[in-house]
Image (cartoon, rainbow, N blue to C red; front, side, top):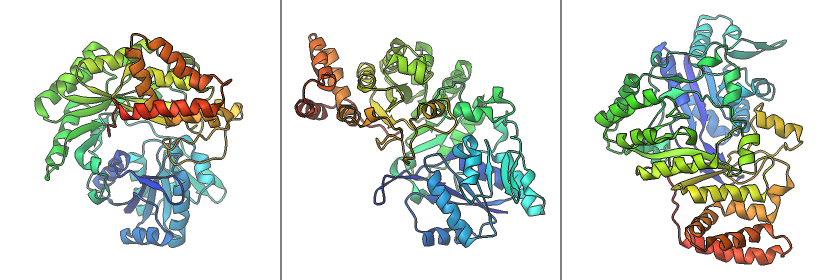
Length: 487
């Protein structure tokens, strides 16, 4: 069987503007490697920019597909829906399937609103291989586990197969399927891998708690590869770097630091065997002195951790992240004390958030002093706890955004369109700079109150407050201590 994967890897802001990503996507890498091991052929249409119908058809035709396999997030599914219709025009007899996060959490809607023949729920290595075997042998493909397929009478709902518990049994991701000419500059510099799968937390905004529920063995959702298996893949990544472009290793795991015993073995091996720094994701409540010391001693250069909201009520009641601010500040300070840079992740325009809560998020970043701040706009993903809460409150709209980083909210809340909120949201970085310097001053408390008042004191006309804010924000921009880290 010849399987052609289609992977969207860009964000479109409007008809004329888009942002190319150009990264390796390990999900397709694993699927391709597994299919090749089973004797099938694979190719990839890696879309890093908008494409016309004619160009899309030509790129598909070059691969001569027996099966077209799309991968999609919720944000990019409208594009996938369009490309599926184009594929059906050019290849009416070729089946189209879609996997990834969106078909897993909203499978029925993905099928009913598109010309897809099938969707795959959850991890797809075994299911896609079984599907290819059925098609090759002329058997009914509609009975494959984890796949929901259209029939003449409706949808065939197959049960989802159990999670693969032994991740070492999977082949390393197929990196040859990606054309380096499509990569962004930073992808050439980093070796990307995952040492684990899954996350044990149930943050209300994240699709993990929805994906977990589709499996018959959800207690096995979090799994780690053996350290030996991980180190062999790192060795393979380094050996492939014939041009000497590789500068660091990027662990793409949701949380690398979940299992301290496993982490100890990994960091000891990494320190002895790898002469490259690495970047990883952690979580503030898991960052203690022993963990920070292990990471730093092994060569960790950057740790990414979520703040998400600086307001304790929002963290606990809205996001299901009941994490005390003191622990957040301690985690960032620990990383800094061991010489590691940090990235904070933050969300704005959350349900129940006003200008006071947004300022709280800016202020916690000012106190935590990450080297880099990732600032996103909340987007409700289907069937998550926070999506259901937004639905009940009548906050959902039909606005679509390709990315959480363009500042536009998909919620119908007038607060997010107020001039004060938009100003704070759009000036997150320089405001964090300002508050950070204020906190270092012995007479900073009255200055903090003045800065707060420029957003909160509505008795003063906005145009006057905005004029003074603009002067302060410009000063913040000229005295930067935060930086941008591509991670």
